[in-house]
Length: 64
Ligand SMILES: [Zn+2]
Ligand SMILES: [Zn+2]
Image (cartoon, rainbow, N blue to C red; front, side):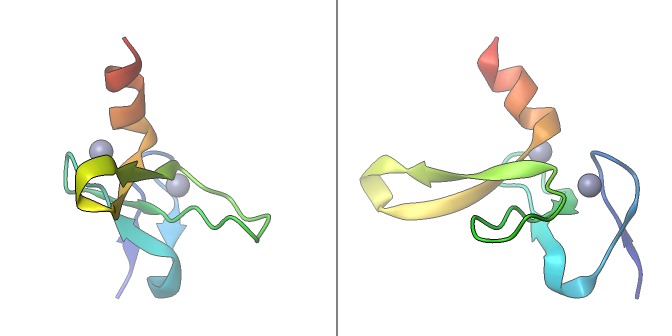
């Protein structure tokens, strides 16, 4: 099954797909130790000690 990235619109391999915490769209998953394309980032949710994936579309909105 092919998944297209909500940020760059390119195809995402199943192992690279992450779901944005805010908008629920799929995007390229950022990996710290790999120089791969990423269209978002990992953000920690302080109190819950959990991590969430945030796509670039939503990052732009939260920076303003
Ligand atoms: Zn992408
Ligand atoms: Zn998003």
